[in-house]
Length: 516
Image (cartoon, rainbow, N blue to C red; front, top):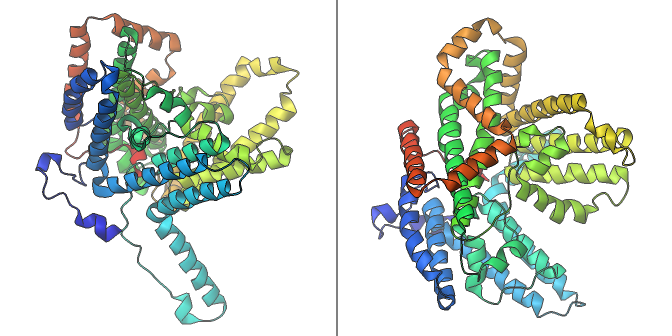
C-alpha cells in the first residue's frame, strides 16, 4: 500500500495544486485563505435554492477532498476507502433484523477494517518492536545468543493526517446505527460529506453523526450574530495558533526540549509552562477556526475547549479539555466497560483503562501510555476522594473558595507535569528535564532570562491572560466585533494576517494534533 501511494506523486498537476510533504495546507496558510475566499461565493450561490442542495454537497465534498489531498497527498484514497466500507456496512446493518446475530458481525467487520487500517499506519512499528523485544528477551533467558541479539529497522510508514479523528468519527457512526440512535444515510455522497467535511477533517473536533447529519440538507443560513461569532473564533484561533503557539514553540519550547541539559532548571520549568500554553493555543486555536469556518458555512459545532486550565480538579479538566474526544471515550469506551455501574473498584479500573487507551490513541510510544495512565490514576483518585469527602447529600462542601484555589493550582501543575511526558521525544528527555528542574534550577539568572526571552515571555503572559479572562469580557469582545462595521471586521482580519506573516518562520508549522 505504501509503495502504491508513494508512486502517485501528483506530477501531472500544476505545482500550486500539488501536494508537498514539507508544506501541507493548514488553516493558517495563505493558500487556504485564498482558496476559501474563492470557495465561499459559489457555496453561497448554491445554498440559495433547495434545488441545488445536491450540487452544494458535491461541491463541498470536492473541496474537502482537495483540502485533504493538500494535507496528506493521495492518502485521500484511504479516506474514501474507509468511508465507502462503513457506508456499505451501515446499509447492511439497516437491512438486518434487530434480533439477528449478524448485526454484531457487521459491527465487528467495521471495527476490524477501521482499527486494522489505524493500527497499520499508526501502531505497526510500535507493536512489532514490542514483539521483537519480547522474543529477544526470551532468547536471552534461554541462552540463545542469535535470538537475543535480534534487531530490526522500523518501516518507513507515512501517517495520514487526521486518521485517528476520522476513524473515531466513522466508528461512532456505525455504533450509533447499531444501537438505533440514528438511521443510516441512504446516499454515499451524503456520508462522504459528513466524514470529509474539511473544517473538522484533519484535527477535529470529532463531530457526532446525530449532531451533523440533520444539518446537511438545511439551507446554509448565517445570522449577523453567527457571522460575528464565526469571525471572532477565526481571529482568536488564528492569533492563538499562528502568533502565540508558533512563536513560543520555535523560539523557546522546542530549543529546551531538544537539549534540556544545555539549559538551567529555571529555563526548563518555564519551557514546561510554555508547552502547556503552546499545546492549548495550538489545539484550541485550530478548534476555534474549525468551528468558526463551519459556522460561516451554516454548520453548528459544539464547543471543544472551555478554558481547561481554570479547572479546580482533574475531572473538571477533562470536562473542559478536548471535549469531543473525552465525551467519545466516555460514550464508546468507559460506559461500555461498565462505567460506574459495577462498584467503586470497577469504576476506578474503568477510568484507568479508558485513559490508558486515550493515551495510546495520541501516539504509539510508552510516554503517551504513561501520560494516559497518570491521568487515569488521577481521575480514579479524585473519584474516590469526592466519594469520601464530598457526599452528594452535602454539596455545600464543594463551594469552599480556598479549597477551589488550592485545587486549581494543584490541577494545573499536575497537568503541566504530565505534559512533559507528552512533549518529550523519549523517557530519557523526561528524566533530563526533571533533573535540571530539581538539581540545577539557578534562580539567580532570572533577570538575564527575562532579558533574553522578553518577547516569548510577553506572549506567554498575553496567552495566559486571555485564557483566564472572565467569560463576560470575552463575550463582550465578541459582541463588539459582531456590531462593528464590515470594513472594521475586514481591517482586523487583514491586520492579523499581516502580523502572522511578519512573525512566521520560513517553515510551515503544522498543528500539533496533525500527528494524531
